Each structure stands twice: as C-alpha cells, then as structure tokens.
Image (cartoon, rainbow, N blue to C red; front, side):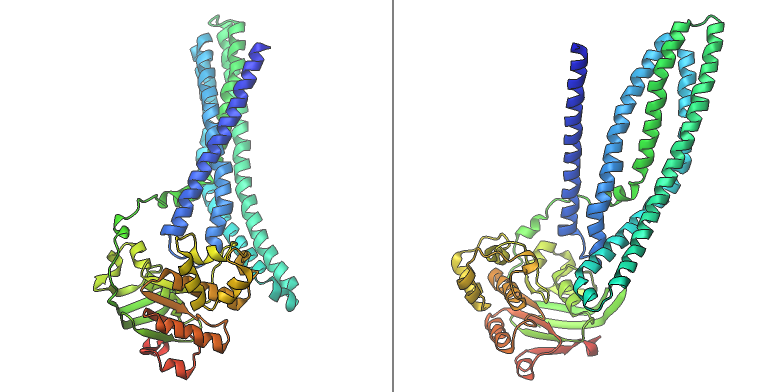
Length: 473
C-alpha cells in the first residue's frame, strides 16, 4: 500500500508538472507570436489568416506538438529501463526483440512527407473556413436583409466541407500508418522474437523463467516504440506551424527608437511605386511635403489613398525613394518613424473600455490635456454627459458613428505629433461639425495630409496642395 501510494503521488506530480509545462510553452509561443503580429509583422491583407493561425494552428501545435513531445520523452524513458532489464536475462534475445520492434519505424519514415503535405493542405482549408465564417458574421445584417441565408449557408458549408475533408485525409494517413506499424509489430516484433527465444531455451542458453521475464518486458519495449512512432507522426503534422514560429524571432528593442528624430522639416517621395495584394496602386509618384503644410489627396475608392498613408508611417513597403528630413526612411527605427504621425482612420478602432482609456490608450496624460483634446474634437458634450469612465462597448457599440470618429480625432489631437494623417476624417460628421474639425486641424500648426472622396470647393481652396492621384498615377 505504501508503494502504491508513493507511485500515485509521483503520478500526481507528473500531471502537475506536465500541465504547468504545457501552459508555460503555450504562453511563450503566444507571447512571441503576439509580439511578431503587433510589433514586427506587416499589416495583414487578410485578417482571417493570422486569426486562424493564432487560434486553430496554435491549438494543433499544443495537441500534436507539445503533448506529443512530452509523450515521446516519457515512453523513451520507459523503453530505456525495459531494455536494460531485459539485457540482464539474455542480451541476444533482447536484441532480436528490439530490432523487431524498430522495423515498424520504416513505415513512419515512408509516411512522413505525405503527412506533411496533407497537414499543409488542411491548414490552408482551415484558414479559408475561418475567413468565410468571419465574413459571414460581419455581413449577417446584409445577408438577412436580402434573404441571402441559403447562399450564405451553402458557401459556409462548402468551406467547412473542404476543411473537414482535409482533416479526414490527414487523419486517414496517420491512422493507416498506425495500422501497418501495428501489423509489423505483431509479426516481426512479436512472432519472430518468440520463435528465436524458444530456440534459445531448447539450446539451453536461457531458462524458461528468463525468457518469460524478457517477454514480459517486451511489452514495455514494443508499446513505447509504437507510441513514440505515433507521437512522431502527430508531431510531423505541426512542422509547417513550427516553421512559422522559427521565422518570428524575438528581436531586441532598437535603442535608436529612444532618441527623438528632431523637428520635422520635409517628407520627400521620389518615383514611388505602391502595390497592395498584388495590385499596382501608384507608379512613379512624386511628392514633397514641407512642415506645417496642408495636403489634400483625392481619388476614387480603392485607388490606394489609405495604403499611401500607411506607407508614409512605414507600416507598408513601397519601392522608390522615401526620405524624412533628407534621411532614407528605411534606415530609421520603425518606432521613431511612427512617432511622427497621428492617424485618424475612416473606420476607427476602439477598445471595449472607457472613454478615457480609448483616448490615452494607456499613455500618461494630464487631465487638462484630455479636456483640451476632447474640446478640440467637439467630444466635450459627450464627456460632460457620460463622464470619462463611460464604457464605449465592443467596437464602440455604446457610441454613435460620429462619436466614435470624434474619439479617434481627439486621440490624434492628444498625442501632438508633427503630422496628422486624416483618412476620410469627418465622413461620419455633419457639415457643421466637419467644418469645425477642419478649423481645428488647420489651426493646430501641424502638417496635415488628408485623403477624401468628396470635399467642398471652399475647403479645397484652403489646402496648400490638392493632388488628384488618378492623374499622378
């Protein structure tokens, strides 16, 4: 009883250690990928791909990768102790048992590359399914309004069928490999060593008791090998995921980012070519922007206006020469380049948090600075009514479209950066509020680069430069 109690306690410790280890590794991986996604990676063209990787792929890595590695380690220790004990009875008979148990590994080697290919196909189908589901949920109101329910369900079922087919094919291959490894284990790994052991007994080399001891231990040789090979096959399904992890290296912070760039003088673009999603947007584009100037960029939807703003921040690549104060922008630390710009998006981003947090985003600002930014963005009425601790809700669900946009505008005023990038900054506001916000933008003394579909001739006349990108492209 004492022995069983001791073994049970050790088993409980193993459970605790294993689960703690899985948690630690999962958190390390998620922290690394979150850093790569938020700090280092390019802006995603399709948000469903990183979403699928951070959820489905990392879960597969846990079940088929981390857990399989721990299982392989545990069974390997069992195998080593079993072989050592069997050698004590008769080393040659033990060797035959071990060789017979190792032969099924050939099946694992033959199926490794096919499993790899099917794992990659399943991962791609899984990403497409996640993207389809995301699109459907975001457009659920439109689908119901136009009675497109049947079409939407058919399209979702089509992508889910492709995903499940990919998973079935992958699991079929893994299962078939397991079946044939079991067959080889029962024949070459069991029947042949039994026959050899009987010959050894008849020859008087070992006793029946010694052979029985080896047979008993053979289960602790064959079974761990089978489990190890099954674990290797499962681990192989995660090789594509692990390759992505290896590319997401944890880089140290760039100390140059701590040094301010200095007073902004000019932004210069020469022979710039800009593309997105394989589509060329701008070619041989030239622009010089002096500090304090007001620039209006006009073009139809989908022409690359927003993409150009992101490229100015360094968040998207562009070909050609882009200089800040005569310095090649590519030579500047990303953080230093970003710190030049405030961004007012057409579709603002809000945390499910308070008004205060959505303005500061965790930054340290005085109450006077907050009040001034709210006043300039004409958000002060909402603050007076709801208070700074008012919960905005998920994606600003508790605010109107105009209020959400003014939170974004107030955020840009609060950080007081040299350049304000305004992407359809007042599209959700009425004419009176739009004029008032433009007054504040122009009175700020900052460099303003605004993109817009439509803007009144009165306001166009106030810009230092009005550039039609359809003519500049």
